[in-house]
Amino acid sequence: MWDPSAVSTPRKALVALVAAPLALILVLVSAYAVDAAVLTSDSVARNVEVAGVSVGGLSRKQLGAAVDEMAAEFPATKVSIDAGDLHLESTAGDLGMSIDTDGTVARAWAVGRDDPLPTRPVRWAGSVLSPRAVDAELTLDGAALSRTLVELQGDKRSDPVEPSITITDGAIAVVPGKDGIDLTTNSVAAALPSGVAEVGRPIRIEVKRAVTEPKMTDEAVQALAVRANQATTGKVTLTSGGRTFEIEGKRFRPAFTVTAAGTPEHPTPQLGMDAARVAELLATNMPPGSRNPTGVRFDIQGGVPVPVPGKDAQVCCGPDAPQKLADALLAGKTEVDLPTRTVTAAEGAEWARTLGVTQVVGEFTTRHPAGQPRVRNIHTISDATRGILIAPGDTFSVNDTIGKRTAEKGYVPAPVIENGEHTEDFGGGISQYATTLFNAAFFAGLDIPAYKAHSEYISRYPFGREATLAYPSVDLKIHNNTPYGVVIWPTYTNSSVTVQLWSTPYARGEQTAQNPTGGCGKVTTERTRTFVDGHTDKQNFHASYRCI
Image (cartoon, rainbow, N blue to C red; front, side, top):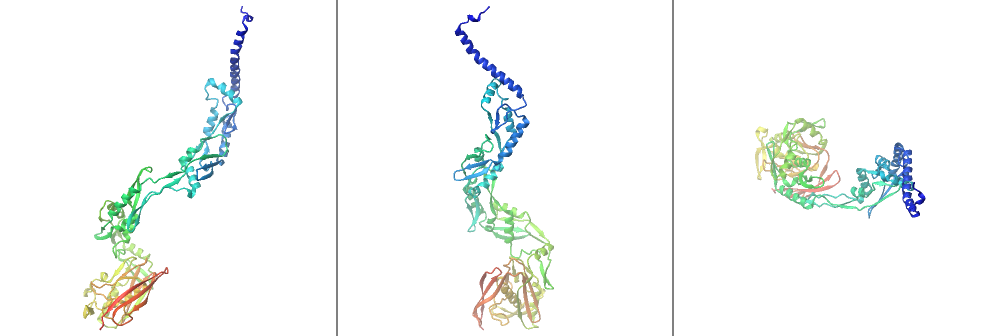
């Protein structure tokens, strides 16, 4: 039998030295096994903390409740953002930060369970002396972060401005792009923590603001401006409904736009045209007389102006016309056929009701001897023009409206002055109507772009303020320079003719000077117009009378 006493003392010491660690490990493993058996798999490992809160030994449900409580408290956490020249204060909640409860619970629950099996007792022993800390996981709402950063920076930030085009001295010119400056969402998101070790502890980050550049270059937009100017150098010939008219190409320049093609990150500037603006430009540049295509007139019934429908009409332009014109101009074309649309007589009358024809804004009466052939002509032209509507921006021409005065139209021969000679012609005497209309327009403050006084002063007319007619050379034109419709309303007796102009008050005209005030030779008459907004202007009207 082996006798332990026979072992030498050194050998006993060696055995003890080897046995002691083994015994310690055995004790450690035994203690871990006992603790693990007590806690079982239904609780958090011993001495675990989440964001500074002890959760060791809690059930999964209790752990979830503890994390939910942290999540409710976390949004109020103060966040400081130091961006050099800009310091911002906010809260975690406003910046879109929140605790990921599911992720945090999963991390805490995994403590001690995901350790390699041989190391579990050792790590368990370490947790007895020092808690095993788990950060609360965070999630970030990028959209909320972006909104809050924009609000916090206020006027301290600016978006980059892409280069654009404008009209300068009638030509398309480039408006250079501008850099912006911004505390970007990406830079702040990268600096924010992905987890927190203690809920409620203020968060402080440092970031740099970025200069944000336009994505399109000035040079690329300049090339488009050159192209647009070249495409609108001359006149554009438009044909619609069998009618051809010209518009200066440069009038369409305000409709050009620069849009971005390609991707948002790598846009390419592209020349376009605003179809609504093209439609507006077409409408405002139509030939004279085209603004009342159905020929609606007015009747004065019991002192009330009432539209009288005309006829259906084909007009420029159909709904596809603006885009078609835009496409043509962009393709370098200067001759374009535009589709038409139908305006019914009823639509014309309804439109006329919107023009503000409500009251007399100008009126004048001249007198003449009764019973002469010229009186019939005065009555005939008065009947022919009664109720004519001059649309806003349109010009009424006596010669274009009446044409050559003939017997078929009801005119008779009567005295006229032709080339300084007294003779007779069909329509003689209608200059009395012209003079009366001229003066009604004079006092109504309307533009009178074409007129000519008689070559001899006739005493029944106002000195220096009258007009004659001769087809087709001498005309009287009245331009409606107001935003309202103007209706011509002549009436007559056997010895007088009166012309009223019905509209909405816009300007009032008065004679404020004349030189000379009588006799013969050259006469200048000054009119002063006073507009409803209070401003005034002056025009001079001229006559030249032979001395006889």
